[in-house]
Amino acid sequence: QQQVKQSPQSLIVQKGGISIINCAYENTAFDYFPWYQQFPGKGPALLIAIRPDVSEKKEGRFTISFNKSAKQFSLHIMDSQPGDSATYFCAAEGGSQGNLIFGKGTKLSVKP
Amino acid sequence: DAGVTQSPTHLIKTRGQHVTLRCSPISGHKSVSWYQQVLGQGPQFIFQYYEKEERGRGNFPDRFSARQFPNYSSELNVNALLLGDSALYLCASSFQGHYEQYFGPGTRLTVT
Image (tube, rainbow over all chains, first blue to last red; front, side, top):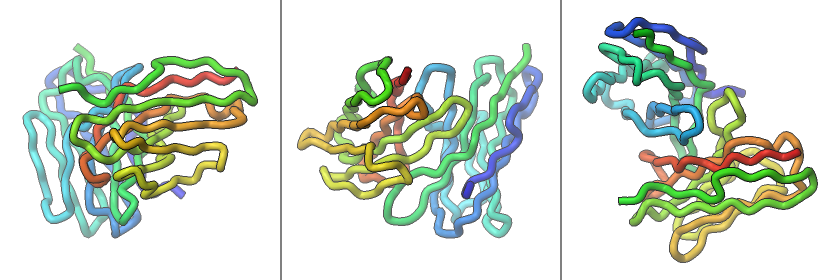
């Protein structure tokens, strides 16, 4: 049972464009929603995260939009750069264990 | 400050053998979580330890075990290795086991 569904599986964006990755969750107990960036051969790096009491959070070129009623959240990368080319994972956490539930990932390619 | 460190970087084992992976968390962090990442998928939760106690366990067989030491470092042990255990094993460090989790570079395990 996949509790966090991520789309698209892959994304190609031109340099300077906006990259948008979407995630949907099922468990209403989730109360923390991070995004991770992973380059080949590296561990995931925490990019930005949001709690459900906020509808939007912005850090530099990265923005999370959160829709609690729809149980959806998305990552927007403004002014996408070739250096942003990586795999992005959304995740969710909630409950006593503190473990992260990850989506399947989106491979982003930013073309120069 | 040093981030999460893991050793070894790469490992090749034969089916049926045993393996021990090691992790040192960020200084001041008291919780370590272990994840398995199969190629092309998001990380899957294996264990979480906080203050040397097991706080959570994912859906993995009993061949997988872990422990946390007084200095908060951790070991993941896998017995009777199967070909399907080939994956990137990630360690994540957090202050209290919830929310902000920071990943190490991982150990790439290949079982032949």
